[in-house]
Image (cartoon, rainbow, N blue to C red; front, side, top):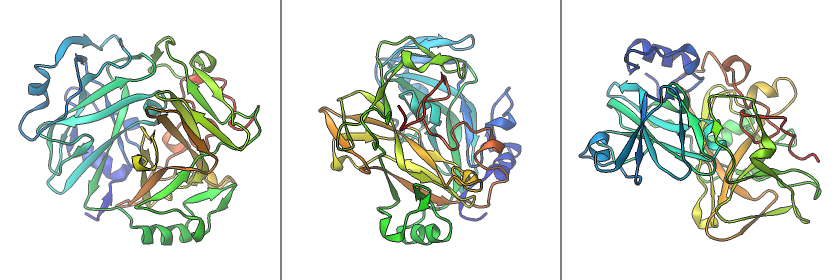
Length: 377
């Protein structure tokens, strides 16, 4: 097998080979994305008194024996409270061959609702990183931060990629890839080589441009009603969000510990031979955290480029820590790391894959109705 991230056709083969299994459940075709497989919530959740870090000795269930205080049935749906950690056994289990590892990340809609999630495995001291040859159950830690959420057995909140070897592109390889098929655009024009900001990935910057009446993002309201993650396009965004408008000088001030959704200034294009992952911003650059949802599938922004729109802007989940923090237009806030695919997928992100955020001009998740376009009054 070539080095790289496994594409959709190889993921279907992985399911057929029972490298990924679901017990009495089947893994539906729609769970398989261009470079990832959705992970679904099992039949129960444990409410925990605190989060914990896995280790190399214990199983997850041995760890939670002292930490869980309530078992919640998810089969008919249940509401998870804000700021409470929950642990959910997932339907999918892994039986990986020795040469394959996996990594997990929240789905985009999960991050856009400020739901913090990470995958745990038995006898591992790392979150979201699944060792080569792992055979066992998967567990999802879920912490709703801003909104209480309603979830149900079978809901997909996270996804995994299967990876063979070290497929990460170096900065020099990223430059060569960009010059061949542009990865970042600004106002529909590819960035020049001198405009690329590189540090083990490509940096993205914020778009907070426009007049003082423009909408450049959204600030989450606390104490809103719970959000049912199983229902799409049913909620009034005004009941959960406040629009953010730039100050004079194209800047905004983030209030501490408040959740914001913003957009990148750059349009991102992921060619079919690559997959990308958004990485957390270096905290030494300021009291700022970006990134919950991290995977960018092959075809993100790329299919749009064929009909005249170059790249799709990335939704950025942002929170200032401890103190108010000012951010300005084109300020770098996150970076994209790129990996090779073992093959080009037979389905790309976009209409073929039933994707929700291709060509996006707003940041809100698919659960909300009547979303205004960013940058307009």
